[in-house]
Amino acid sequence: MSATDPHPLSQRFRGFYPVVIDVETGGFNSQTDALLELSAAFVDLDDNGDFMVCKTIDYAITPFAGANLDKAALDFNGIDPDDPARNAVSEQNAIDDCFQQVRKMVKRFDCSRAIVVAHNAHFDHGFLMAAAERCNVKRNPFHPFSCFDTVSLAGLAYGQTVLAKACDAAGIAFSNREAHAAAYDTRKTAELFCTIVNLWQKQVGFQEDWPVF
Image (tube, rainbow, N blue to C red; front, side, top):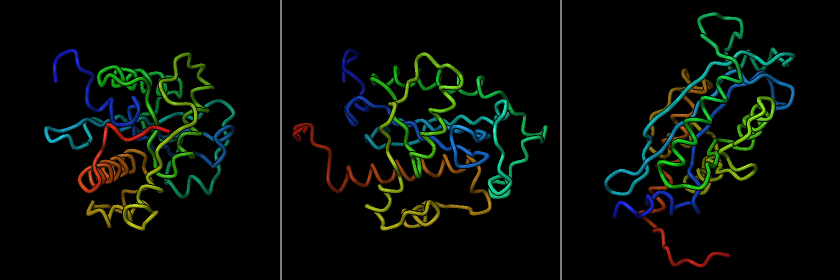
């Protein structure tokens, strides 16, 4: 690859750069419920052209003004929004910093924009887009509606849709004790995504001359 050639990763997903996202929230409604944790994992290609996780970022977030906090959701994820040890930042600061770093990675890999990868992706995508709207983001680096869902990918590759079981089937160590924290779930989802993409590459292959419909 010459210095003027685009990065090979930019050729894999129609110019989209995959960013693995996980959120922890105060409920299921992205418009009304608090975004409490946000984590993102970035990918690169190793010397063999295999996908790998190269960087992760994590934020504990203070609920936005008027946000709903459902007790059942907090009991499930174990988050105490008032705990000072969380070192939480405002939603505005978290989104601004996260999106700035995403834009840098999109540029680094010669991609056109980012695309969310997540487990049950529309849930995470919905909360991310709602937070971006509340924060008046002018240049959202993510595709506004498309995403890659590792539930579907794992179901296809391993016949498993639960993250823990999919990781087990893929040979990825998984701790149920550490699960349901955005930082941990993002890393495991990213490992799962890379494993499935690499498996497809080895068994089926990526053909540049495949027709595009």
